[in-house]
Amino acid sequence: MRRGMSRLLLVSCLAVPIVAGCARRQPVINTAALEDAVVTTRVKTALINDPTVGEAPIDVHTEKGAVTLTGRVASKELEARAVALARGARGVSSVKSSLQIQP
Image 1 (spheres, rainbow, N blue to C red):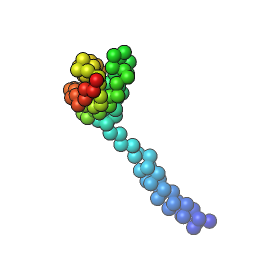
Image 2: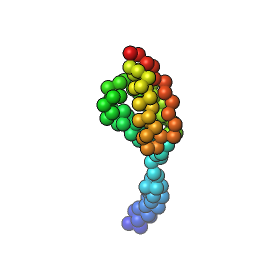
Image 3: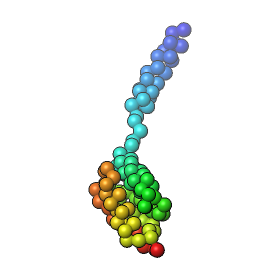
């Protein structure tokens, strides 16, 4: 009986630090990537909801708050509108247009 208790105590002493160590591990969240994804969503939402730009095939890429627009628009006016909408989205630090004009 005494030998069984010793083994149980030994197993308990080994298991507690292992379980406690696992419980303390927190998932690592890349907050910069998450913030960029939120900014991208805000810009895309603004573009889609705009009646003049909404149907243009515009891609949005965000890195550290800097937004790059790529794709095609029918006129310089639509490009300017897309850039203005992107600049107006919360969290945007700068906007670069790589949009192609294709009437």
